[in-house]
Length: 304
View 1: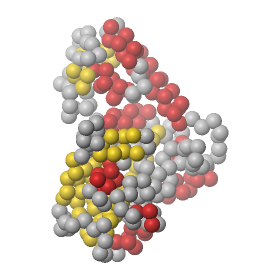
View 2: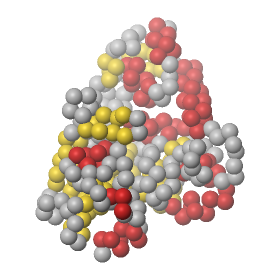
View 3: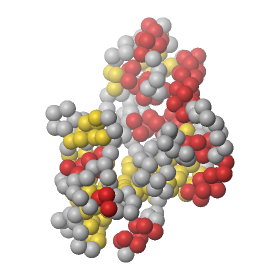
View 4: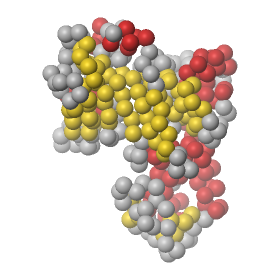
């Protein structure tokens, strides 16, 4: 049955959500013609709309092929030709773990640590995670300077399931942000920003003509001093830098944000004050998991 049950999906989109976006369209089309993929026991087309009421069957040999393609795409994306010894970072990595079982590792990632290794980074979560657990796979990414809760899958089955849950918008996330100038609203009040966002290169912008729907709910937690407000942000959609763009669109900055400067104060702060505070999601066995990453000293000193 289709897991993305909040919306209807084309059958080919459902296959890519379930088995990975790298599954070739031509392979899906061929498999449908050969009835290696059926809907309710019958032959179907790529454009067939499916819901949670439909019985979607994939032949065993095709599932193995899909899994192979998923693994190869992941390995290609995360391979590092210059192999290094990252075991010396394991002690730090272990200190960030707030929960672990046979399927997942949940971290409270510090600010300044990248999720994936790049040409300008010497250390990242993905490579150290593989030192800790050979089959570790990143399924939830935070920006380098964003701290807080993030998830690592410990096996392929869990990685596929959680990737699908994120893609289907079934994961609830909340972030703390320290904002300037002070938001003119009472503590406990909520502000909903519904402004479409478009991604252009490494930045995102509000664009009412070409942007995709983006909605964030901000709750005023407390006012700090005369010029700052602590907010709890709940993004209902998953656009790149959504919280930052939405705040900048109403002329507020996250402290330390140099990329989306609505005012002149952001680049003079000691660090980027956005923290992934909580995450709630469902595992493949139907169990709901909920984790929180407490604020570090930089935050508690500022909040008082």
